[in-house]
Length: 129
Image 1 (cartoon, rainbow, N blue to C red):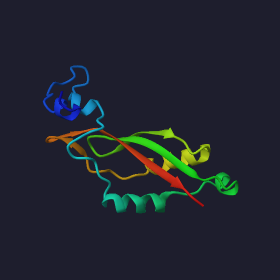
Image 2 (cartoon, helix red, strand yellow):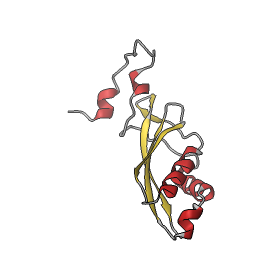
Image 3 (cartoon, rainbow, N blue to C red):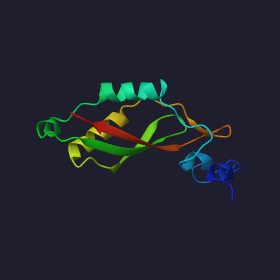
């Protein structure tokens, strides 16, 4: 059996209700070309470090941790559907991770063949004192 990306590559049908290609509706985990943050991995790390603000409550109680988030980079490169997969044990850290991801600029789009598709991205946000 072919991988999902190879199977979907040949889908050219359009949803009659929304008039969208099915490739624009479903998010993908595996694609031919992954979405990329402007400036690459180094740019992503710099953006997170500049944008992240340690929540006062967590700082005062010396709470540290890693928030594992997922989000979708849509066919226009916009970050949508931000979710916490595994929290850091403190709600303020989880909210801050969601805020940082929500402020991200447009990414380059993920592609299957020549078609831009929505891609789910998983990203850890670390909080260390």
